Structures are given as C-alpha cells and as structure tokens.
Image (cartoon, rainbow, N blue to C red; front, top):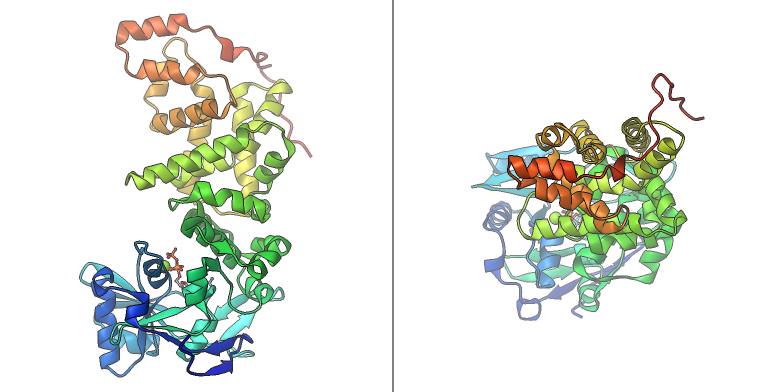
Length: 442
Ligand code: ATP
Ligand code: MG
C-alpha cells in the first residue's frame, strides 16, 4: 500500500513498512484512553519512540470497543520507570511497566527483538521460549508479536498506523494470520494456539490456512505450558463473553483433548448429546451474564467442563453398589485431582466446584428437614442453577428443578405439602452397604 522499505526480519518474515494515514484508517482520538495518550506524549517528549499497539488498535479498526490499550516504546523498562512516578516493574518472563495515570493503569512494554542465541532469549527442547527479554527496534517488536492484526502501531502524534507485517490488509480481509513460520511460532509459545481460537471466536474472523494447519498436530504441546498459565488462558477464552462460539473451535482443532482430556474423551465416546449440551448451556449462561454486567465465577464454568467425567464416574461407582453420596464424592475428587496437572485451578475455586457437585446429590434428598438445610447451604444458588442446566441438557428428567423453584418461594405449610408430595424417584439407587470399603481402581 504505502511501502517504504523491505528487509528480511529475524523470523524470516518480509518486513516492510506501510504507513496508513488517518483518512484511511479513521481512528478517532476520542476513542483512545486518556492515560495511554498521556504516557505516549511523555515518552515521545523525552525522545523515545512510543505507539499504541495490540488488541486496542485491532479492535478499534474492527469498529469494536477495545478492552484496553497497550503502549510499546523504545524506552527500556527502567527508563520508563524514571519518567513516571507512579509506575511499577512487573513480570519475569517479559518485563513490563505498569504506569498509573489517574485511575487508569497503562501497560508499557519495551520493543522486543528476537536475537537468536542470546542469553536473554532461551528455548527449551520443544522450541518453547522460556525467557524473552532482548530489546529491539519497532520492526523487531512487530515480528515477535503473535498475529499480524496484533502488530499494528498507532502514533497519536501524527495519527498514522504503521504496519510491518501486512496486518492491516489481513484485518480488512477478516483473517487471523500468525507472523512467521506457524510451527516455529506455536512451538515457541503453544498458548498462541489458544489465542488464535480466542480471536476467531471473539472477533468473528477466520484462521488463515497456514495458521490453522499445524494446530491439530501441535495441540499437545499445551501440556508443556504451566498449568497455572493455562487456567488464566482458558478463562480468557471461555469466560470473556465468547465462550459458546469459541468452544466448538477448541474441539475442531483438537485443543480440548490437550486441555480437558477426560471431557474430550466422553464427548467423543457417548452418543448422548447431553454432556455437550450442558457445557454449551453453561458457556451460554456465562456469556449472557457477562453481557448483562453480572458476576461470573470460574467455579461454575469448571464444574460444567468437568461434569461429564464426574457424572460418568458417579454412575459407574453407584452401579457397583456404593452409596450415591459417597460415589459422587469419590468421582469429584478423582476428577479434580487428575485434571490439576493440566489446568491448575486455584484452591478457593476447587472448594466451590466440590460444593456445586455435592449439592447435586443433596438436592435429591427432599424429606424431613433436609430441604431446609440444603436451602441454607452457602452455594445453594449455584448448585440449583447447575441442576437446572442438567435438566435442560436432558441428562436428568425435568421435575426436581421445578420442585426447588417452588420450594424456595413457599411458605411453611406449602413447604410441608411439597415434601409430602415427593415420590422418592431419585432415591431408588441400591442401599449403601455400610462397612463395605471402597477400593480404588488400578
Ligand atoms: P485482548 O483484546 O484479548 O486483550 P490482545 O491482543 O490485546 O487481546 P493481550 O494479551 O492484551 O492480547 O496482548 C497484547 C499484545 O501483545 C497482543 O496484541 C500481541 O501483539 C502481543 N502478544 C500477547 N501475547 C502474545 C504471545 N503469546 N506471543 C506473541 N505476542 C503476544
Ligand atoms: Mg490487550
């Protein structure tokens, strides 16, 4: 379009420079955050290069409302810190400076290069980058970003967008294209595969063929990523408003297998669609709640994502003659413990996930004082919502959910009537043999 120069970058990418003027891209300063403009002004005033980059610019060009704006600069982290009194150096793998402007926190990153064989840039045996703190020019910085559309630099001082990797044209074409050799880039950081899925889901774009092709082959590399980082990344993907549309892409690209192996196996092996349906409903609920500005908890989502395994194992153990409560407790612990190695769910959420699952058997018990004590349970609401999802998914017959819907709004005498009316259909499992010890399999 407006090419100024062309050279080979370190990722063997053709680096050229397109300058896209304001009348062409149409970015309006009123849509930019005050804090990031201020930070750029100060940096440029002190003689550094500084741009807005990343998701903020991408989303504006797509006509969407950006979540935040990142600043990229030639100033080193310590130099940034010197310029802003209220700033903090964070991150080990990548050093970033958080600058506070009023109530806003602006993330400032120094241009990174990709000098190979540097002590500052280390890979492990699968090609994964474990350290990446080499600084470079803006062109170097562009080629080490993930996708072309995320490597557009906006300079507020002259209103120009700089494009070194063809991101502007890709955005116009609605294409998510990884920068450089796809396999190398996924090996460097397998999370890029999840980010690819996130962007097609969230932005309604499509994956360029070369960007899509290696994902299935390399999906299991996600197992090398730290389980706590995966917890965060999965939330960004499934609990950020676009979970329902993103989930099928995870399945399609075999990424679900890498992240949730037992769920993936059960979704594949059973003809029943209710597990898939339950997860879809939970994702949909989460998306809707977020759109309505309501709170969401990872515990509910994870309770649904792991439910296929828990439910399957629960039924298996109960069929072997163990009590329903005990079977569910064992199935729950086994499932969560097994999966912590893939995705590390923080303890506080694990406790809630267990409670939501425990409630599935508590909600079945509707005699005597049980319903009142269940109603008092701190997670009653989440457990009841979960039960409704199970009913709507077709896993269990409708009825129990409605009973609880009524029970919650009943006065004392109506409650007694409801209890009397219960036919204990949900309690027909074989009676527990007390004293019989559960033996762990294998
Ligand atoms: P979102 O709107 O979801 O925040 P984003 O693209 O801004 O999307 P961030 O995680 O905020 O995502 O990252 C900011 C920018 O940093 C990205 O646009 C991209 O240029 C770069 N980046 C982030 N993660 C990676 C990665 N794993 N590999 C290479 N570049 C990355
Ligand atoms: Mg961002």
